[in-house]
Every structure is written in C-alpha cells, then in structure tokens.
Image: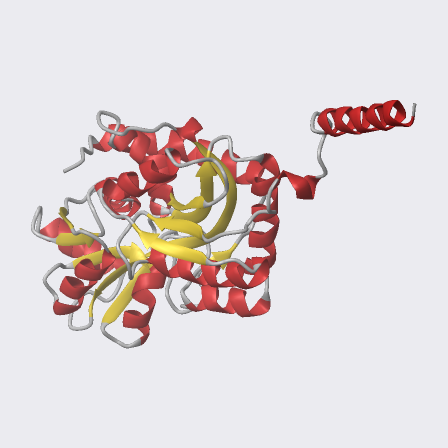
Length: 331
C-alpha cells in the first residue's frame, strides 16, 4: 500500500511537471531580456558622414542606457541600399538595426526600383532621431557671396557651373535638382561616393558649389574653409544664425530637411520596437546629447514608431514625384 501511494505521488508529480511545460511561462523564463548580447547598428554609408556621426552619438547613449554593446557597422554602397538590404533580411530579433535616412527609407524605392531587393514593408519604423537641414556652400575663395550671386552666375554661364553631392540620387543631388527647377538655371551635377571626398574637392574649389547635410560640413564652415550660402530648412539653423534660409534667398521650393532614424526588420517584436523608441526619445532629449546633435547642426526628434512611419510614407510620395520629374537615374 505504501509503495502504491508512493508510485501515485511520483506519477502525479511527473504529470504535473509535464503539464507545467504547457503552461505560459513567466516573461523572464522565455529567454534573456533584450538586449542580452551586442546589437549591430548598420550605417549604410561610409564612415565620416552625417549618418555615421549621428549613429555613433546614438549608439554611445543607448549602450549606456541599456547596458549592452551597440556596434556601429558601415555597409555602404548603392545609395545606402546595400546596408538597408542587410537589415531588411536580418533576423527580426532586435539585434540588427538600421540607421535609416531620407535616402534609404524614401528616395531609393523609386531611384533603384529596377534593382532594389527589399520593399518598404520589409522594415519597421522605430523612431526619427534627428532632422538636419542641408547647406549650400562654396569654397572660401569663391567670388560667390550669396545664393542669388550663384543664380546670377549660373544664368550667365549656362551649363558651366558645377555642384557636388554625396552621390547620384541622394537627397543632396535631388536638392540640387529642386534648385535648378526653382531658379530656372542649369548646373552640372558631380556625384561623389560620400560627403568626405566631395568636401575635399569643394574646399579645393574643384566644384563651384557643394550641397551637403549640415553636420558633416559644419566644421569646415566654422573653420573658414567653406562659405555657407543658405540652409534648406524652413527656419535658420541655431548653429548658423547668420546664414539665411533658401526661402529668405527667394527660393522657397528648395526647402528640404534630411532626417535620420532607426528602422528594424519587419516582424521585430512590438515590445522591442517600443522599448527602443522610448530609449531613443530619452537619449536624444538628454541635455548632453541634444548639445552634441546641435553642434552638428541637427535637431533632435525622438518620436513614436507611428509618427516616424507617417513621415516615411509622405516622403516616399514626395521624392518619387521629384525623381520622375527630373528623370534621375542611378549610376
């Protein structure tokens, strides 16, 4: 009798253990909480440009806030499409993120429509990190003092003036196309592989004008190597209060704002998306981080996934129209 009772007890315990495995587990029992290992932040452009600079500022703060390593990995090429494709096809586990731009998240779908291997639905919006104006500059020895000077010169040198951008089909290139259409001038576009080599030639005077995101040009402007003609934002940049906007220069149709945000692979668990958005908002609104972004000429944002997705959708529509009107094609 004693043995039978003992066998029943053991059988019940075994059944309870087996059935327990079918019951919902506490959150902590489903695996280590995110992030429990290094997170890759893919920058789809070479090091040294605005995307890279902002990514490194953000990665440092997220690393400190979340207690996990954030590794910035540069995967440039095809206007940012190569790095974006890496993230679009990555496991949706929160350990591979994209530092997206106006180019990768909006422009490239039309520009590279014949070759792009991912679609908007393959990437989930997390948060817009920073808005950044573009800036139009000339080398320090240029006779051009204002944007209207440049327009006047261009009209008297039809097809003779050049402008550099970080690449064919980039938002900077398309800003130049907006300038040509708005001012009724012709300019020769000189595409480079990133802002670094473009700025080297701009400082040397090998192009008549450069169009760049303000952060990567800021040091050269402040150092007197480049002269800023105008910023493309709706209002003047606090970092360059004496530099007029394109609207103030009489060319409101050239207003553009570059933006840089975080995207993740589609199907990334919603709790991870929301946690990231919350931490990004907290990080970019910290006074020290705001100051770093402001030094680069950027404006911190840190919005919600829904707000960032609405921006992406609107920008896809806008830049698709610009590309088709200007008949821009990739290299």
